Image 1 (cartoon, rainbow, N blue to C red):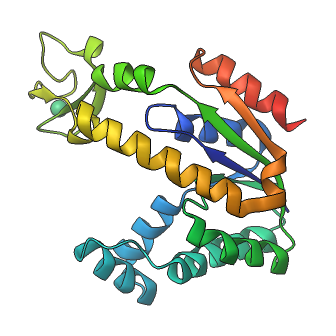
Image 2: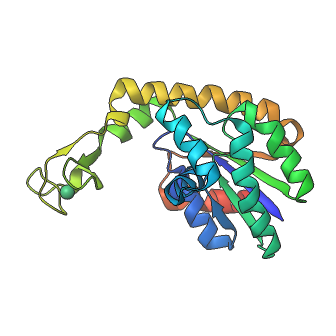
Length: 214
Ligand SMILES: [Zn+2]
């Protein structure tokens, strides 16, 4: 099974691009955030362990993440999936060793590591345009507000905490650091890396990613 890993800082459109790439290529989309949320909501044994980390505000142990990812990857491989797009995983250098072992044991080949590039200034600009409704929690662009209120329910719209400049800048720098360390740890696999300018229009970003895969 082939595998594409997609990285990008906040506001780079990483998840959206990964989902569209999945629709375009027929590769399955896999997000560790979605998997951990699903384990927690189903209350599985691993879900209970994950929830405990969440409650204690500690990082998930790499072994636990590797285990939940393994079962998803295994079932994709068993259903003869064409390939898989990993949304930002492995995220930390500590996750890389277990991930590479997993790739070996499941015969997964890392085809491409896609890195969406976006400067901090542009990330801050994009974040400043996003709003969240305080009532229904839907996220919108500021320009979609109707009379300054949520277009869905009329609630008050505000800038998400994560998007406040100092928080966004911290998330951006955390991402840059963990990306650098993770790419180092990926070793040979990171030689397949392709850097894509995420400052372009979304459809152009997607096309560049598609072109990078062939
Ligand atoms: Zn609303």
